[in-house]
Image 1: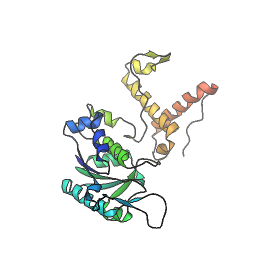
Image 2: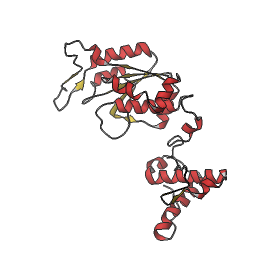
Image 3: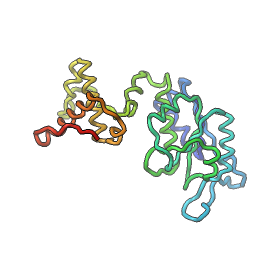
Image 4: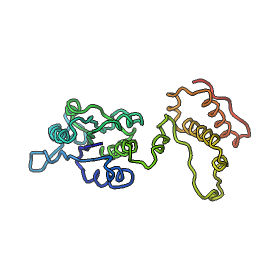
Length: 258
């Protein structure tokens, strides 16, 4: 897969690509990431790429023309790429969106700075705008790297075990279950006995229950989007009862239809 990042700080992106999963993906030839800097297309002596916003207000706005020329250079490298703008006002990045990108051969990621990008450039050259969360960052480089990392994990040959990507949080629409490793006892805390018993069916059931329970406790919005099976509903009722029992010695009411 080929990705080109349009950024005013190419060193920021390039440095981060040398570590961990991303570094291995690039080393194995699974992923190729390049950068294009709009500043190189600025025509004045100061290499200006931003200006004051029309209508007044704080901050500066990235100019459309240097971005257009940067996009033209990116298009020469990845002519069939989907063009994505990382912006605070974009649609939320989801695992399903990441999976959609992972089957494409090319991507261009445009990273904003300052107050944003001239909207005319977005209208003319961007296929979709995406956001990594309801937070404001100094620029789109970190979101771009997050998206590249997430996509790379789904590319064949990146991870040592393909099941790792299939079983992670959000891959099934639920959060991941808790994980444990050696030693069996740490600071008086024990590994759950079911994980040491060797009963794979029981382990799978426990993991499914924990996954449902964590999603219910931490991301109830994900459960509202999901049609639970009868078995999943039973597992979630069990989880809730187990969580409630240590507090008051009793169970909780069964999960009702929302």
